[in-house]
Image (cartoon, rainbow, N blue to C red; front, side, top):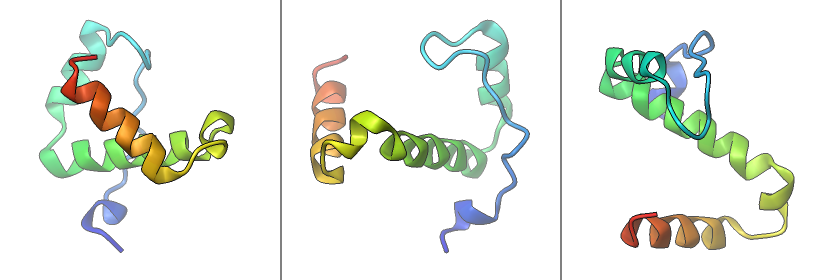
Amino acid sequence: MSDTDTIDISGIKFSSSVFPTDEDMALWHSLGPAAQQAVIMRDVEQGLKGPPAAKASKADIMAEALDDVKNGI
């Protein structure tokens, strides 16, 4: 179990998954580093369980995500 598994983030909900609102940004900045990491891990795990992810390996998905980050996408 990672440290992020012990943090209760069940009440943390953002209004947008694409373009964060001012309220989303304020919520994000109000979280400590461990809570931010827990939210990221929750969202990654949910994404890996989605239908598009089922068609690719985790390695493929992570490689694509890292490439996007490297290219500023």
